[in-house]
Amino acid sequence: MVFRSLKTLNPFIPSIRCTRLESKNYIMKFWSHIFNADRFWLRLVGRLLTIATVLFILLAVIGHTVRDRTVELALLMYIPLLPLGLWTIVLDMLQAGRSLPWFRFSLTFIGLGIMIWGGVSMNGMGEAQTHSESNTLVRVLHWNVYWGGGNWKSLSQDIVERHPDIAVLNETPSKFGLNRLLKQLGPTWSLVMYEETRSNPLAVCSSWPLQFERYQNTKNAKAMTVIVTVHGQPLRVLAVDVGRNMSNRLVVLSKQLLPRWRTPMLAGIVQTIEENEAKGQPIDIIAGDFNAISRSMGFDAFAHVGGGYHLASKFSRDWRGTWKSYLPLYDLDHVWVHKRFQGLRGELFTNLRSDHRGQLVDFQLPLKP
Image 1: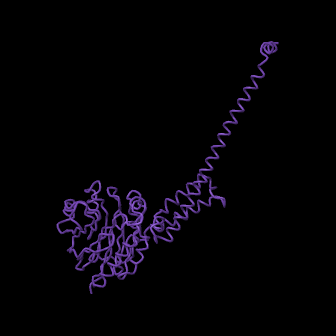
Image 2: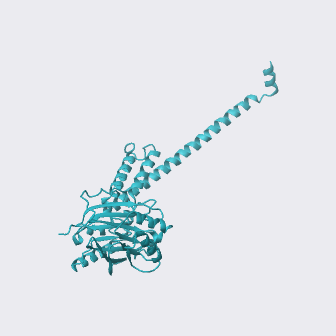
Image 3: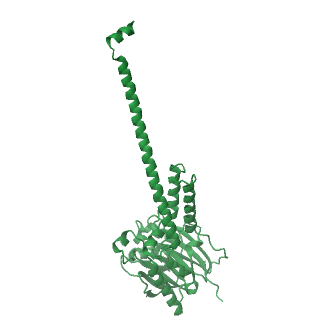
């Protein structure tokens, strides 16, 4: 009775209920449309990221296989494999393994392969297993110390604590800073500087008798040979510092974006080794900041020129990257030791006050007859 009277008083009540229901349906359809649109855009972004990732993988494979035959191919060689593989796996996981149409998690397996390739190629294989004699042991330290870094005292302390026989330093601080280092190392230490300027690129220090031999005329690099007499045996050290860019065709871009095309510079170092060998002055140790990764084609000749050299970082159990110190994706600093020496082993260390990691290399001198 009451309901009927209300209906009589307001005949629009049913229509109001219908309007509310329609509004609710409209809102649900609206949010469903928005949700579907979001899913569409997410799928689109995922597809685009997948395409870009696969393209980068192809470019990286080409670069690391063909290597630096040209400046452009050198750029591809500098695509780091380990982070690329990690990103590939994360991207596929975010898409529930359906990034590629072949089979589920196919992109994850590709990413794992890239990571393994990158990890194996950048890890040392361990030290040479030979008997060690203290009276023939030589310890060489190489480090780009970033002009003294943010704290030269900290960097100096790292050098002192490792007790090297020979220290080859790139981007050294002023002579005053180097003299402070020598005082910490001990009274028998001396040094040879490439230039006695504030921006001196090279210095060789040792507690053993040290003799500057000559500056080496090496293309696109600063280099000098120094003779260090350790345990009564003279060792000829070729210290190298390579500047930034070498691309004459892409001068502007090369200073900022492109890696150096190092082949001419490395060919010049090989020529220097051959010339010294022909003079009866063989080089025993090559150390420096080459600004070139060890996969560079120019390093291939180091395995046989002048009797051949071993890359010391491969005889470590460490990650071989040296730059930048907080994320060392590239091995730009190298120590090469002549193959006539035995017991080679290496160790890499980090001090964030420098943008490069350092290396400590041990080997045995041959016994005197």
